[in-house]
Amino acid sequence: MIVVIGAPVFRYYPHVPGDYIPAGSRLFHITDDPAEAGRAPVGESVLADPGRACAVLADYVAPPDRAPPPARSKLPQPESATKITADFLYHSINEARPQDSVLVQESLSTLKMRRQRLPTSRSRSFFSMSSGVLGYGLPAAVGVALAERDKGGDRKIVCIVGDGAANYVIQALWTAAQHRLPILFVIPRNGAYNILKSFAHLLETPGVPGLDLPGLNFVSLAAGYGVIAERVSDPALLASALRCGMASETPHLIEVEIDPAVPPLI
Image 1 (cartoon, rainbow, N blue to C red):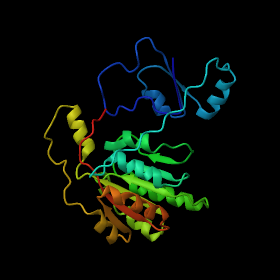
Image 2: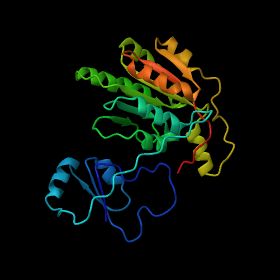
Image 3: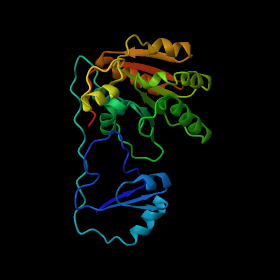
């Protein structure tokens, strides 16, 4: 039996042929989103408040008669290299960020590594787009920072946006500068639309044109909008740059040159 509470079950991104759930299994989906319930192709969807549903179900669940699973082991530190990999970048961000920091992300080609290296354990600490929404990251970070200020909080906002996605609403940097929002923008620059290259590999359609993004200079773009920025390509300099950006009380942007290797989509 598979039970999913308060999360989407079928994202359709990317589509991979095959069974939706393993043969012989049964799916129950509790959601407060009628659209999610309506488009579920298999299983039984229950439209209800997920939090209240958990409280009700807890009264019917017997205490377990088995030992709890062991704690997840910590990922090993990435190996040092001459190039900054996405794995090394996310590890370095995790080492430098405050425990109560808020992550806003739109970097799809390295999403798996981000989830592994930058776990979240507090509510309202991670914001991301649904499916493949383009241009979400930068303005979302501005909105989260404004909401944090309105609440009287001072949590650090860390925004990770790929070089392809950052161009859609680049003017959000101006808003961050005008409001002096303490956001650290991290742009992993691989010089390509790697998520689309990953799709091309999955769909066996190599050589798709227009997916390379040479000549982008986010340091200059940020300066034009009034945001202090720097570029890092040396792994040895990354930690100090991130610490400086985390400590800034105004918007700060770091363009990080990362290994352009195209990761597998799945």
